Image 1 (cartoon, one colour):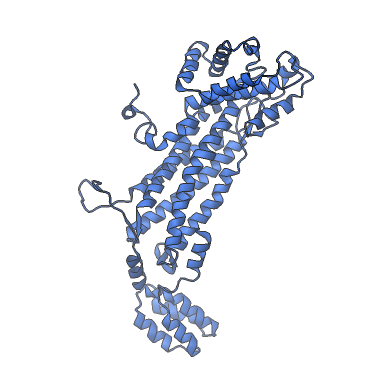
Image 2: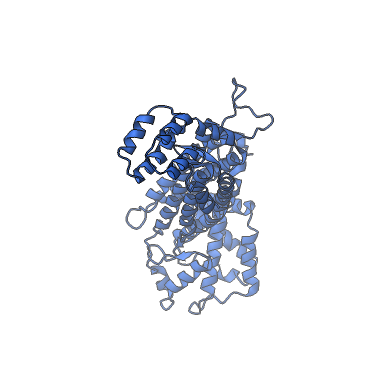
Length: 456
């Protein structure tokens, strides 16, 4: 009996609960179920083709029978297929034999079992199955989790849209912003990146051993096989790939995995920034009874969720990028290097999903510390050198930049020092008054407007 405590992969052990939803898409069970689904879709198309006289149209009863086998496909069914594979040493052929065995119970289908897997190469079944797995696992399950993270980030962006914060460029005090604007930047980036994932057209082919419909035409020369292939693929809500060798070229997979990796990269950027804001005290973290931050330092409340997320996004990207670089490459009409790599799609998506789960958990613990942000601003009045020298330049004050550089560069400047400097400027009185009223907390430009516009 399998126990998570003995698992080789942390996805099946320590983190199994957090990625369990992906087993419906990427497990061996899921792959076997999708293979059966594809075999049935092909059989239905064959039966609906008038030019294939030996296979009559399927009755509603027969179609319901096929649909019920898919709807009720269980782990026990998958194990039965694996038992057959122990003899055949061929996983797709084992699926064919399992289906033929099932057909024996229905007189309408039993005489036509040789039309199961008719004219197909294994890759005709596999490539469509992989597309269906990605449809369920990425463009459904993974995107649902991503959308939850995006919504949580958006909530933080709007809630903190007007909260002023000292920005840091090169790690040094720089022009003030608001926390909400900085979070909304990530929301906007991720929203754009999401469209890349959602809009990838998942492609599939059903055209025989090397993509030319050779066996198909040998059996039925008058059938429009490309049209039949297209109908089959599109019946599964996938995009037909008309040209291929033995394998579907996998270019869409590379596009999808690259798009996911881009999201993971943006999320790493987000996690590192929030980690830094926690370090500065701009965010506190909700405490949980019984939790321990350090085995020796009782005071610690570590930003472990963002650290965990960052690590898992990195693992995901290492695999996603290998997938996107390797899968479009195959020697001549086919080699088998893609097969073993494709079995790890779920691992790559799993680490990304785990990163999203950890990030979502971390965001849920954040409590903004507005007082800390205001104190940080009040301790860095020198950032007002920028607006003062810019207003001076407006009114033609010679050497404006150089005067402020001499006053502020590399040193702290007090509010009183700025007030004295402003009072002596040869600029209109109303301009001096406006500068005198300025504080670091008020010098945030359109940050709040931007946050509310792009963070929602």
